[in-house]
Image (cartoon, rainbow, N blue to C red; front, side):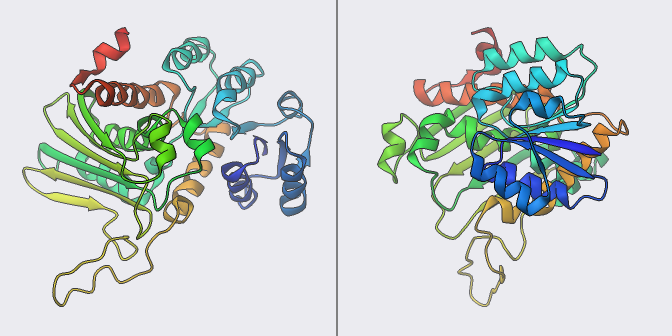
Amino acid sequence: MRIGILGLGRIGAFHAETLSRLDVVESLVVADPFADAVTAAVERFGAEAVGSPEAVLAAGVDGVVIAAATDAHPGLIRAAVEAGVPVFCEKPVARAMKEGVEVLHAVRDSGVEIQIGYNRRFDAGFVAARAAVQSGELGPLHTVRSTTLDPAPPPAAYIAASGGIFRDCSVHDFDIIRWVTGREVTEVYAVGGNRGADYIKDAGDADTTGAVLTLDDGTIAVVSNSRHNARGYDVRMEIHGFQDSIAVGLEDKLPLRSVEPGVSFPAGQPHDFFMDRFTDAYRAELDAFTEVVAGRRTSPCTVADALEAGWIAEACTLSLHEHRPVTIAEVRAG
């Protein structure tokens, strides 16, 4: 099949490399405002370069991957849907929830499949955790703990445009909690602080946060995030039920050092980057998209799914700023 790629920055170039290695992908058609990025894609992957997103959609592509800047996502999703081309779009659907809801309303009856990029749904550990919950082997759940710790904060320009740590980072935890447990979040309480880079505080954001989420069956989920983790990129989840407890990410590349006498775990080189931690998940995610394009499956992460994680991020942001519990119903109504 022939796949278009809109945006060839860090993640777009990574997707181009992944797609170029899939047997079902015969050719790539790419567009990016930066000529050097396009030239690199042509040289590395034999991609066909065209001048604009419109030209990509008109080039006979079977599907399109949107890895452009966040503000471009709504317009590009709509353009692809209008052209009848299945879409893979990196999160978020839109910077603001209001615009995301407008996209949902515009595309939900189109019949065109749209997959939003939440790669943890394709990580082997998270897949196994979801299966364990669904099988009932853990018994009813009572506690979930989800962690995402970055090794170092992004640049100041990125922070200023990110929408805040809950919308940019924690949203991955929010999505995977919903997906693994099969439950919805009803209420949140969030706190945050700044002990590191001043430019994060100056942007009105926090560099380290904690959030307590109440799920609709009474399960408590605790989410921990930070832009500072000197030992590496740490993504984990614990799921505790009344019959058993399991963990995702408890492996030799875990960026955590045990000080228990005689304990050598974890013994491997710690993960230091999200592309290292989730290389296989990214491949599985785009492999799934080719099946969506081929009509063999429906989207594994819809626009509606992505918006649910977005509402949790909105509630946490409000909770942090106002120092109070916030229901999901409140932010939806606002």
